[in-house]
Image (cartoon, rainbow, N blue to C red; front, top):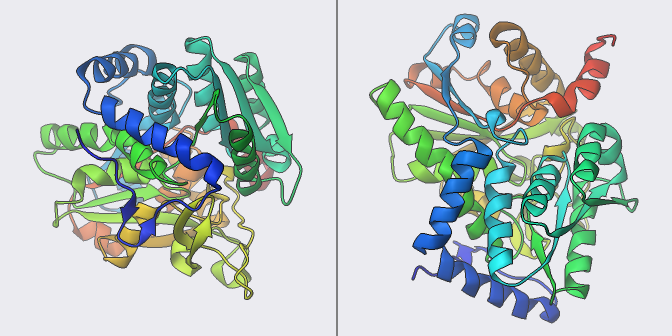
Length: 393
């Protein structure tokens, strides 16, 4: 039985109230029992195939190749998953685990709404009560996903404290879990939070990288030279990176949100501009003010509007295995438009950050095939993108 990782170098751990330690121990023990259990894995694999639509395709983006002047460029099409993003991989696995643990109530936090929709979908599939916490600002800019969650039978609880974004929604979800821990499982949406969540989420998302590895070998006859993924909390990126960490010849690049510009302080780039500290139960890089208080993040993308990051990303930064960089809101919007016009694929604004990196990195052009995780589709972002781009409805 493989033990669930508690730390990644100095990062990770558990910085939570004592009332939650027992629940975290219970969760870690339960996941250790099922992660290699044939029955659990068989049920999850069947759901991923027949409910989610895996394996997702590997798509050669010849239009992008022509625009950027290099290639081949491949997109791992997580946008084609049921519910529209990679989040369903993790949500299904955790809800299956909760059912085995005898928990009948599911809670979650969400920023862009995709994790909330995925969790509500999984809960509906298994007839479980579901409550999703979402910041008021995010509810306004992700209205479509709020409607979807409510259609699926979930209660969406608005969070009005602070900036009304993901950080505060997460805090409220944690408070709910502390109060109702005996009956409730908290489905954390990214590879963040106290152990065992970062390891568990990364493990459930590793299907992205495992599939992509096989697909690249079949289509290109080799591994990619560079892999690119956007990083907020970092679940799509760690899910892709994990399958390639031991391949030294494969460059790994994580792209954060530079927002209105790193120099303005209005960004969501803790790996680029932050310092180690504790947020939501884990020790990792985060944005802090001069007094060491958690600073507010900003991004045009609700899913990247978070001041922290998963602890394994922090470790991979410090050991130099992954290079982390950032792109601005304006660059992401340019990439959003570019993919839409030349490939006929409307990406999520989160994914557009990774796409924007392709426009500026000459090293990627020289490294061989480039593989990018297209983590979600842009249906949820069309109102916001249209407003920013001046497109009339």
